[in-house]
Amino acid sequence: MFKTLVFEISGVCNARCPYCITGNRSGGTGQERFLDPARFEGALDRLLAQGLIGPKTVTHLYNWGEPFLHPDLPGILRILARRNLRFIISTNASRPMSFERESLPFLKHIFISAPGFSQASYDRIHGFQFGTVLENIEGLLASLRVSAFTGKREMLYHIYQFNLDEIALARRFCQDKHILFSPYAAYLNDYNQALSYLNGKMDYALLRRVSQELLLFYLDDLLAAQPSDYVCQQFSQLTLDENCQVLTCCVAPKNHPDYALGSVFDLSAEDIRTRKVSQGICKECLCAGVAWWTHNPHVPGIAQSRPSKLGRLVQTSRQLTLGGMLRKLAGKIK
Image 1 (cartoon, rainbow, N blue to C red):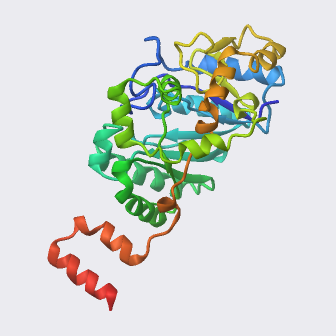
Image 2 (cartoon, rainbow, N blue to C red; image 1 turned 45 degrees about the horizontal axis):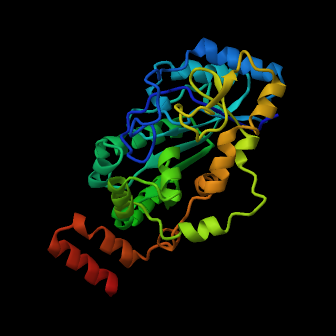
Image 3 (cartoon, one colour; image 1 turned 120 degrees about the vertical axis):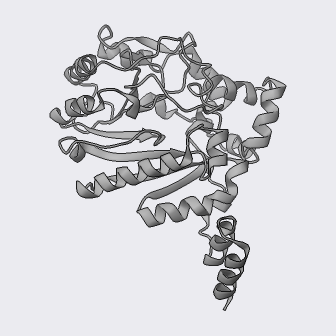
């Protein structure tokens, strides 16, 4: 029985992240769509009947897509609630977010993905209006307070070279809103990009941009630490796409020949268990270090330490007038 089920309910994402296969539009087929609730229900019931998932399974309602774009997300969540199945959801907060009371007891965790904490950073990665993102987060938190939500709220802050000075602002926001703040170095969330970088075959123009935007100083040491007997955690989770295809893993792009094992409605439980660990892409991925890199995100020291009050003041100085900044600084020093 798989304790983690990754089920893509939205094959669509509205973000424009250049280092993600949905954002750069490099890994799709042009047939991306939203998962029909009836097929979602049928797939869940088949997995339950086969003993592949059960009461202890947590369903992640996302992989490459944005779940809050789904036109009937409440219907999807009601299906999980009727089966007493817990779920986790992740969002870029570009759209208003809310939950029905019926589904909230089964919401275990909500992740908010952030590429920085300014309009300039959002312009470079997601392409959203930063003010709208903050409004949507505020709206979500208000609805969760009314509903007495007891699960976790967490911001996944993707660290780039250009948003280092925004870490303190984002952390302070999360502290004020009682959101767990989890910063880590952004990586190449595109299998082909990651493979070409690690194999030294990346196109020069992309390599130049990557070197200017990502933090990669740690990568050689990280890859050197990969155990010789490392077993990818993808082997112990089950992943389905919006077409109810059982996938080799959640990393392989749709245009890769080893992307899918077949339809969940056609495969037996034994087919799924054995074929998941015998795909050709797995050896390629493990040898290059893509799996190890993906599952071990780096947290730089600058993101681990909590800034002093004086440090936070310096970080927010650009929001103050010069006179106001100096008066506030003088008060802190006293």
